[in-house]
Figure 1 (spheres, rainbow, N blue to C red):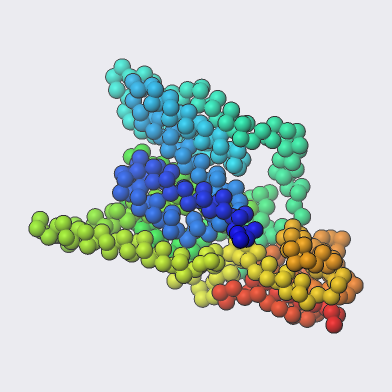
Figure 2: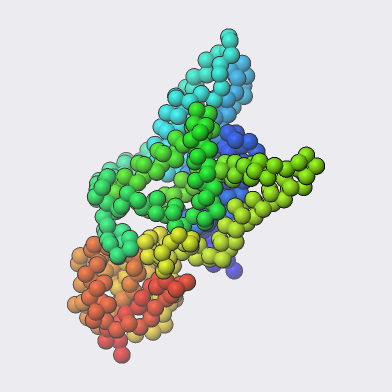
Length: 450
């Protein structure tokens, strides 16, 4: 029997896996098939990609369609103006991909970045007498039609009311992101410097990217910087810059957003890997007779170091991929800097199961995950328990009539519940702790349950 959790994650796992194809196509269009294959392999085994494609969020679909949108638009621009049929087909495919991307997630800035890049960087020089390669109106029409067809709810007044409330931060029931020992505001209104630190994503790349990939990425940046006038290098540098800088300056940050960054990181790393391998071959000064054998040997070593080693790291981190840290991370860094994104309620099911097994009838269960708790209490046959949310201003866990159980999660520390969590740890009885890879994922406390 397939578990509910596996069934929920399965669609994203499928689309996340299929993303190797647009990554290959995009990288190959700029840098050749070899680089494309390496970039696809880095995505397939990349611990960052594996981690956040398993989270049942919309980012997976957005990235899948966004990469296809980039690719087909590039193909349209690279196609001769004399071949209008192929050019039009690529514009239609790109427009359809953009429409599906918008339907997956309302992030229109990627569309703007695509158009801005192509305004400044040309994919090919126009030949004498060749028709101009302006983007046809058909492209924009396809974007709109596909978007509305895939997401007709966008036209409903209720959707716009919700969007207005969401963008105005009126739907927040709690806020805050615990990073290390500091609780930061994690809302857009605190941009650029009042929210989570600007080094949030840089720290993620530094300590959560396998070292061979990080090394190849840095090498790739040097290669791209030297060739910045070329379309492929310009595209990668453009997208990396306009991802890292704006996202780092926003007040609200989440590691799952990096799913749209990692394709550019992996393609850049693939460029670096190819350059490093070629550089090593030049240093060895191989004779013509030795060239076939040694070239194959160097390529095998390169693949083992840059792809197999990170893949093995991902295998060892399974199934708790998000807790992976590399050798650059301080000791005990797993679950410390990004507890919310590293645990994502990992261990909560086990904590609820413990309460369901031990709590007397009618006991109160204080927590921070209403939907999850309701689901598992029903699944475990304990609908008699009374779930309450700690951060609810109408609820005071210290004054709740006993018996009371409390589930605390470090990753769900908010400004609205921080004092209550400290009070629970100080005055309630510790009952149970769910530990994952040495990291405390969930703690169960009780009061007057005997």
